[in-house]
Image (cartoon, rainbow, N blue to C red; front, side):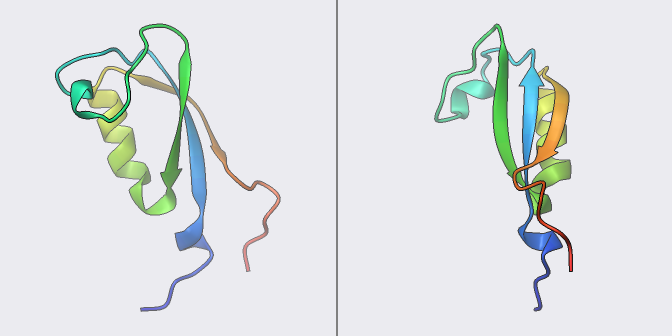
Amino acid sequence: MITSARDNRVFIYEVSGLRQSDATDLNSYAIRNSGNILIKVPFSRLNEETRRITRLGGMIVDVRPVNPTAHEE
């Protein structure tokens, strides 16, 4: 299998509104009730992570690449 630069891209999700619940208790970190959190997401998991954040009651307020100056080949 050949991997491309697209497969290696990583994005930062800025998320608001996540709250501690039974589902978030399974995480290895606590969820704060206030403020925004940043979550690093590989390109291959963007859809899965978006659904998870929505299911947990969060709202994605920004998505940006980790390395915005890199050019695709």
